[in-house]
Length: 374
Image 1 (cartoon, rainbow, N blue to C red):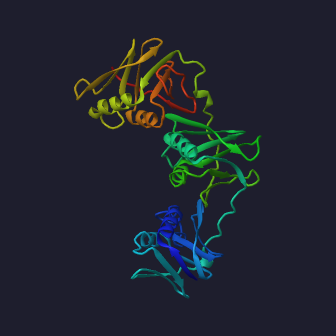
Image 2: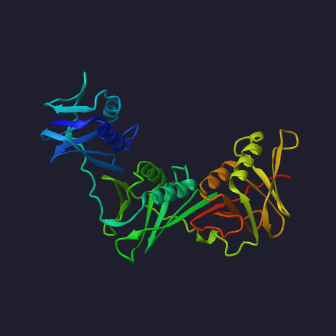
Image 3: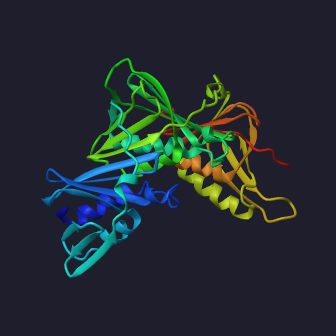
């Protein structure tokens, strides 16, 4: 293999592909990245049995061929190359990387031992990248960190016609984002369950100037694919049944409170300074005011009052401040509507553009109140 390539393009492609290589691969061979020079392109791929990544960039190919080398080491080298052009060449045992006056030699890994990449499923539909990224950042707010319950580490994605709904829960809260997309078939109806961490990683790496194509085949319902700007990745689906959560949304909420989102977040951060981590903060809704407080009588205390627009009876609820801030921060609108039934039932949070407008249901965040002592 002999290749001439732009150094910046190479560094970007290697960084994107090697992001799927785990810190501790199941076997040493999975720490590799495969390079193949063919037909005027350098093709890069990485795979760890759960996630795959493949990309290609234009290159001057003097001699076709392929090589498997340590991915993270190649990423470190390529991001530090000094010249605009880089030259790659291989012999029987090593790959030589030359850029300007710098030269590196990497030992080749046995390509025969590297697993075959999964076949990318057929396209299911597409969505603009910004909508895709925002929906994932909202849905993954409530993804569980409990690895012993894999189903709760996932995001349920419901594809139904021109609408996609993403849902996650860790049993204490629930986040749901919805968006419109363009399906390949108008009557599409399918459900997948994907690890939230993999979705986050995919969303962070997309080119927001191009659409994201989502790939899935009901005939082989174990893999979800994502294509964007020439980059293709796949994620293995979680095998399990996501809990039934629709019943957690109340049909009617007798109490509504509309608050400036940023003012509420800032107040929560200030009041929670006196509490230990995850200790509840109290929220007393009375008239057209919200009083936030934290801390016990024999400890440090803090309180703050905000003006609100409230409809319904007075109510007092308490929440984990970290969960509150995470859910509120995912709201893109400047105002938040809190919808409540009782002090112990889940509260729904929605965003809205104006203080007197209707709430948006594109993002719905449910949070279960904590027990507290007066």
